[in-house]
Every structure is written in structure tokens, then in C-alpha cells.
Amino acid sequence: MAGNPTHTVTNQPPALVGYDVFGADRALVEAVDRHTAAEVLDEVRAELSALGRAAGSEQVQEWGAQANEFPPRLRTHDRYGHRIDEVEFHPAWHRMLGKGVSAGLTSAWNRPAGHVRRAAAFLVWTQVEAGNCCPLSMTHAAVPALRTDPALAAEWEPRLTSTIYDRGLRPAAEKAGALFGMGMTEKQGGSDVRANTTRARPLAEAGTYELTGHKWFCSAPMSDGFLVLAQAPGGLTCFLVPRVLADGGRNVFLIQRLKDKLGNRSNASAEVEFDGTWARVVGEEGRGVRTILDMVAATRLDCALGSAGLMRQAVAQAVHHCEHREAFGGRLADKPLMRNVLADLALESEAATTLALRLAAAHDDGSEHERAFLRLAVPAAKYWITKRCAPVAVEAAECLGGNGYVEESGLPRLVRESPLNSVWEGAGNVQALDVLRALRREPGALDACLTEIGRAHGADHRLDRAVKDLFTELADMEGAEGRARRLVERLALVLQGSLLVRFAPPEVADAFCASRFGGDRGASFGTLPGGLDLAPLVERARPVS
Image (cartoon, rainbow, N blue to C red; front, side, top):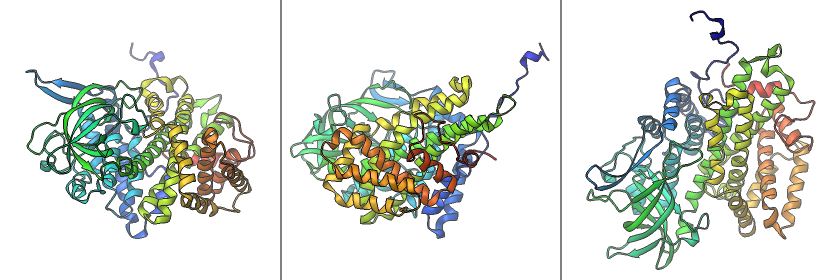
């Protein structure tokens, strides 16, 4: 009945739409300013704000919801019975992916401040819809692997770094832009890629092979090309598998099924069969793992960036809700206990963003010192940032109460997505063991990390004490494998703390050091110690003014 008072909605926050996702993120804006040369800063900020406004628009947020509500479907055959192995996506997926390509999310390698501007854009775009970031990440990361073969790089790099999304399966030479996927994992192998059983038989034409095998996880199966590993006569080797051959015929790429995943539902991940599949070698035969190392580093950084983006969106939603929600006679955000929770979440989010952007800046620098820094800092950051994402998303959803458990709030999608980056590109133990490997084999990597940490020496006594504890861990490498996670966690936290002490507002750095290094904190969020100035932390995390 019209006018029925039971139908009047009160005390519900407005939707978080119509804002600049980039410009409202103070930690991200400051990181971009810090790591971008003055002569291109205005250009970069304008570019990122344009993407931020798109990401915050009602239309684009609706695209993200639609892409997840209508997941991809596999069509193995056409109506006549011909094998086609195609994946159909909702139009919203193509709109999202097209916007990501045009925003430069695959074109970091040849632009001034290319990695910093792309990292910031990736962090922003993840907040709308994380699934389409997978092919964007794979395409971006394929470039350094292809550069091991100058001829291949000359052919493919202009397509991969194009800002034109050219969908549809056609010969890559006929397309204005191309996307790449990846197939490394096999049924028996998991992260142990050296256990790969896919076979590569050399063909008459130099550098070409015929592949036979099964890939348990193939990312983005509708891409134009794929990097895969297979056993050649000379050992494990990296190959480029085009989806469509130069003559227009389809390569043998049999999609057996799509994975029914916990989250990341808009994105297709597939099992594929190679049966006489044509491929070109990338790099030297027998050196497949070395060929893809730079690619792995790039995708691992994207995992950290993706988790930082998910955390930022979760915190933004929680703060926005609590700023507009009334409870027990006042705004929920003003209640001391809720303020403690929000401030704690905001600290985790800012620390993740700050470290991830520092790593992107190291890619732009490209010096030997910065490459050494990345060798240790990337797996440590990937381990820790991705591990923190799930508890942040769950706690943020709880800030909305029962509303946060309802799909329309968007928080359940963030919660389902939150564990993904911890698993992708090597789960936690793989990252921790990779850190140990770098410590034992590449002493320059530790020196570079300690130099970075040392720039904050003397700025906070709690951080200094944590650094000493880290030195104690590093001095005793006997039996280090069993405690590798603890060591990597400490390294990541000290890196975050050193950056916040140098660059964040004093109240942020103080709260981080007090809670992460001071020993006066509980096991859950919202247990920051007393005596801290928390109101500025919550204010800093607000998505809109």
C-alpha cells in the first residue's frame, strides 16, 4: 500500500558510486607522486583520474556485476558438429577488458613511468572487477619472456602493448591488438613445473615444434597466444602457442572444460589438451624456467597489486558504510571500537599499496641494484600482501553486518576473490622457499633489501628493534625451511614499516609500528593499542569527502 510506513527505508548508506577511485585513495596518489618524474606527473595523474572516474561510475560498476552474474560458457562444437573450442562471455566482460586495454594495462614496458602508472591503474581497475585483470596481467607479463628472442619480440610486442582491444579469433598478424594467456600447471605437477610431462617434438622448420600433453590450468583460453612449458629433447623449454595459425586455420587447442572456481568467476580458466599443437620455441631449448623468470616476477607483482586493490575496495566500502550508518545514538564510524577496526584495516591497506608501488618503481628504474631488490622483495611482498587480503575482506564485510553478507553489497564477491592471489603464481610455501633460495644464492638481493630498510634507520625505535630481530633470523639459516614463513613475514613487515616511516603521515607510521612491531596488539583487527590517534587514519581512508 502506498505510504505504508513499513516500506520507508532509513539509516541505509548511499551506494558508493560517482567518485574517482584513484583520486580518493590518498596513499595511492602519494605513491604515484613519489615515484613519477615531474615532467610526466601531470599526464600520469590525469590518466589515472580518468580511469578512476570510470571505475567509480555506476555504469562500469554494473558491468563488473554483470560479468560475474553471467560467467563464461564453453562451446566445444558448433551447430554442425565441428570442433571450435570457444568461450562465450557476457558483453560486460568485453567492455571491461576493452577499457582495461585502452587504459594501458598491457603497455607498461615502453612508456615513461610505465610500471608505476600501470601498477596504479591495475590497483584501481581490480576494485571494479578482478577477473578481467587476469588476461591483462598475462599479456603484460609475457613481454619480458618474449624479449629473450628478438625476432619474436619484434613480431608480438607491438600487438601485446597495443591499447586496442581486438576481440575474436583471427591470425594475430591481422589484429590491431592481441592478448596472451599462460599454461604451466599440469595434473601431476602443481607448482613443480619441472615435473612437466607435455612433450615437444621438433619439426622440420627451425624453431618450430609439435606439442602433445594436457594443461590442468590454462589462463584466459580465448587469448591470441599462450606461453607454455614442455619437455623438448634438450629439456624443459618455453614455447609460444598461437591460438590461430598464420594461414587462418585453428591450432589444435582442445578446451576440455572450464574450472568452476570459488571466485574470479567472470574469468575463464580451462583445462586444455595439446595433440599435435604447433608451437614456436621461446629462448633456448632446455632453459624454459630461466626464460619465464621475468614473466613470473611480473605476474607475482600483479598478485600483490591485485590484493592491494581488493583490500582498498573492502576498506573503502567499510568506511563508507560506517560514515553513513547511525547506531547507538551516533555515527558508527565515531564509535571508539569501530574506529579501531576501521583504522586497523586502513593500515593494512595502505601498507600493501605503499610496498606494491615501490616495487613497480623498481621495475621502472631497471638498475642492477633495483633488480636485486626485486629478486627478494617481490616474493616476500607477494607472500605477505596476498595472505592479508582474505582477513581484511572478511573483516570489512563484517563492518556492514548482515548487509555485508548479501550479494548486492558487493562484499561477498570481494571475499570470494580474496584468497586467489595467494594461490596464483605460486602459493605461500613456494614464495617462502623462493625467498630462501634468493638469500642463499644471491647475496646482492639481501644487500639491496637491507639498504632499502636502512633508509629508515633511527626514525622509529620499534622498527629498529624489528630490524634487529630480522637480522637474528637471517643469521641462523640452519633449519630455515621450517620457519621460512615467519622469516618472510618479518621481512615484508619491515619493508612496509620502513616505507611508512619515511613517507606516510606520522599518525599512520606510529600506529603501524606500535601494532605490528610493538607487541601490544591482539590477533584480530580492531585491537590496536591505546593512546594512538586513530581518527586521522579513518579520515584518510574515506573514499569520498
